Length: 133
Image 1 (cartoon, rainbow, N blue to C red):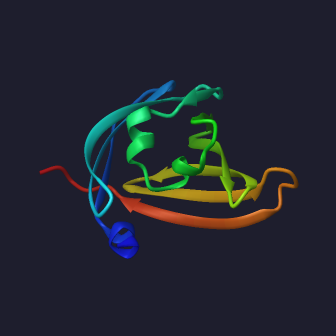
Image 2: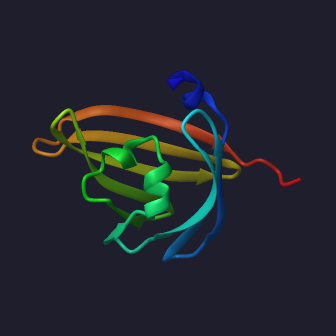
Image 3: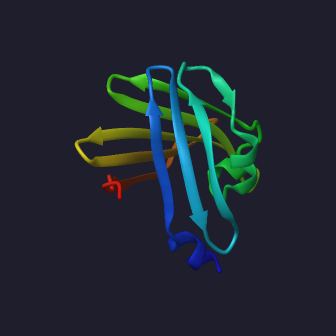
């Protein structure tokens, strides 16, 4: 069941992007959810509540975030996200830098220990723009 969920098709559509807001449309159908909804992400360097419906349907680090908030800001042309997470009682920081180059979106993930900054995980996920139609 976990493998099917992890490898199932998920669609993220960045429907609108301004300096202060990203509107995302999300679709997924897998072992844990059947979802088709949208949400806004505020981009201002301050913590904001994660959309409650997104939180209820997520099966990723959002579920491990005890505050229910995340922070987004621009670093030059890159969009950064940071949120606290707790895994097996340990406080962590999950950061993602979204880097867009042409039709390729790379998500650079970094997970560190909150107390020491020790790096626990570094990963890159790549997404390709799919033509409409």
